[in-house]
Each structure stands twice: as C-alpha cells, then as structure tokens.
Image (cartoon, rainbow, N blue to C red; front, side):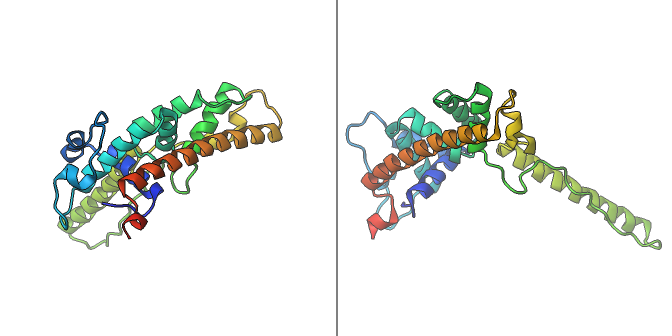
Length: 230
C-alpha cells in the first residue's frame, strides 16, 4: 500500500486516527515501537503478493510509525494542521502555543496559532439550514397536502442533521476570531501585529516542513511512495 506523496500519506494516516471502529484498533497488533527490526506492511498483515490489505489498518500503522519516528513538537504541528480529529487538533494547538517564541502577548500567540491551524474557509461558517418551502395548490386533497408538508419538514430536519454532523467533526471558528483587532487588547500598530503574525506563521510552517521531511525519510525507508515502487 503506497501513497502518491508524503503529504498525502500523512493526511491519510491522520484521518484514519479520527475513525472510531474495530478495524482501526487492529494496528496495535501490527506495529511495536520496541521491535529492533520492523517488518513491512505486507508481512505485518500476512498478505501474499497480489492480495489487498485493509486501508484503515494500514493508515493507522503508518500513523503509529509517524508518532514513533517524529519528535512531539513535529507531530503536534502535523496534527494541528492536518488532523480531522477535533480533540487531538485542539490539544496540538495548545501544545504548540507554549513552544512559540514571540514578543506578542499570550492572547495574540494563542489566536495566531489557532488561526494558522484552522484557516478561514469560504462557506465554513456555522449557519442554520435554509428554510424549506413548498407550494401547495388550493385544490390539493388533504392527504396530498399532509404528505407534501411532511416531506418538507423531513427535508429541513435532514439539512439540520447534516449541519450538526459537519460541525461535530470540524473545528469551525466564527468570522470575528480572524479579526486581529481582537488578538491584541492594547491596540498596537497594525504593522506590529502583522509582523508578529507573519513570524508566528513562519515558525509553525517551519515545524510542518521539518516534520514532512522526517516523514519523507520514514516513507522512503518503508517504501510507501509510488515513485519508490516504480
């Protein structure tokens, strides 16, 4: 099982960590960080050439390999930036915040790190579902009118459920969070705040780039990139 890129493999592995099912739990039987000589994925799963292995288990094995091979601050950077697990993402943001060296006040650093990890996305604001309307002709029979109303109500409930499900699995910040005027209560110059933000973002991007480089070495060693198998 191979990936097209290091970033793609990292994102896939982190996404698998956010899945709660029995298939995911099997990775613990497949990887031991204490083994001096680790086996490759195919031998771990006991598959023969040409046979397939469970993608979720493989991704979780890769995630475990990354956790073992990367320093915590590098793993925190990847989790904060790419994980879809809300709890782990929030914890990684908190851990990264204390590592950032900046003359900016603590509130500014916290909001900058959070905004970096959860960038503002178009259409990501939490909004209520649109009202579902239905046109009912005056001469519509009662049974038909009731059916049309019930369908409209069901559609509205389904839209609300989709919205709640999306919000439950994502960290969504209000638009006001990205306003730097709320990051610094002392009202320092805009140029100063922009410089602080630029340096904080730069430090975090450096951590991600370093983490991806180390992850790339791990992927190369394990033969997990498509170019390695060509």
